[in-house]
Image (tube, rainbow, N blue to C red):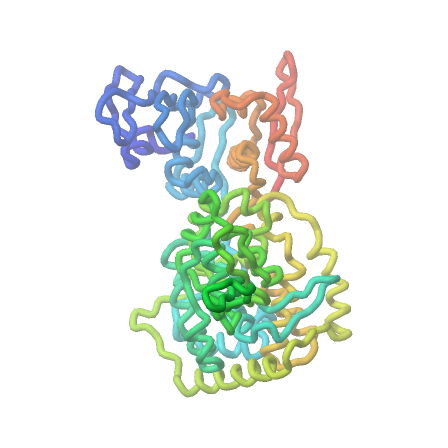
Amino acid sequence: MRGPDWGEILEPHGWALARQFGEVCYWRRPGKDSGWSATTGICTAKDTGYPLLRIFSTNAHPFEADQAYNRFRVFALLNHDGDYEAAARDVAGQGFGETRQSPPSVRIRTPSAEDSWPDPLCEEAYHGLAGELVRLVEPHTEADPVALLVQLLVGVGNVIGRSAYFTAEADRHYCNEFAVLVGRSAKGRKGTSWGYVHQALARADLTWSVDCVVSGLSSGEGLIWGVRDPIVTREKRKEKNRTVGMEEVITDPGVTDKRLLVLESEYAGVLRMLERTGNSLSATMRQAWETGNLRSLVKNNPARATDAHISVIGHITADELRRYLSTTEVANGFGNRHLWVCVRRSKLLPEGGSVPPSELQALGDRLAMAISMAQQRGSRRYRRDDAARELWRNVYADLSADRAGIAGSLLARSEPHVMRLAMIYAVIDGAELIRQEHLLAALALWEYCEASVRCIFGQSLGDPVADEILALLRVNQNGVTRNAIRDFFGRNQSSDRITQALHLLQKHHLASCRQEQTGGRPSEVWCFAGRR
């Protein structure tokens, strides 16, 4: 790799050059005042000739002791938390990337961040009153119109409570949704997108806007407490200081309004909470999305909730999401109960913006009328009309198809997400059936969410060895020999483990293998087979 030298990579992260003898450098890790923790100039990859950083310290996070790392891996670990595709984009953006002519020349060719951004949201998603409100606000804010739309839909879905549902086999699905706005950086204007939406929803239900919008997710028990049922205990009944029986006593009146919209401007903190030993937040949130019947198994916490209607809006950066969303939460269904939505600043408004109050008020009043109609109908089952039913039959196979990797796991609940969104569009329209235009709007928004997930996570499979090999193959157009792959890991991965990772890449059509004659034993060359 032609790129930054070892000093340019290590020193910005607190590493110091302790001593140097010719080409051999001794490096001291951050926080260490004497001695040395690693060397460069001694180890090189046998087949590729890549220089390696050899780690000796057991406290040199993110590196492991007695392992060797090439410059690209070091750069990726220190600057991108091991996200090799992001590191490749960064290196390419700095003008680096060509390797030496032996082995064959390699040029890093990866899409830029702009190229990988999802295509603009289809016009069908801006259906009805929701689209009107977004178009009214959009010229006056730097927020992404997608952020305005998604938060409006989630907000309406929470305000109406348990008044609308559809069934999928034996399960009821209500209008509560979890959505997380993912910006490339803190400049994505994720937070500013909520203000106008909140104004419109407050016009529809002021009590909800004051009492039911909260923040501070930290534990499953805390979430249950916010929507708890009355707490009843059995106590001794006494007469003249003698116990004559037992009686039930309400020790806490509980919460009457079971609607709760959790607004988390720092969703990375929520994801970090999930990793704490004994924290029940993940399981409780999954129950909240699924049924709304919540209960903690903690012995000294008797709180439970019935028919809770909980929605979530979170804000996070893409780097934080990749760093803190663990493989456990990807696999256990926590991740796929969320809509992950890429957002960014739509424009620069140095003087800010101001929506005409009368126009915002008029749309707010129309929204209030639609919400009131849904609430007055009471608990109502929504069904698709004939045109929507035909469209659903046509798209169902694609929605239900298995998908590979982390992205596939996060998109595994596409059918209920689409139907919940379609139902919200129908509610906003004041319709009694889910019509074709509602389903088309939901499908358009889901298509954007799917593109967002692929933009954020790429083709990552969740297997760290396979993901590292995939990143290596992506930036080497001419392929990589099996021996070079082994040396890429500093010979610290077994042949069986590498074979397992390569077979996983083959299974998902991301890598192909060819044999090249070398005059002796044929060389095994692996190439990237997906989209660059």
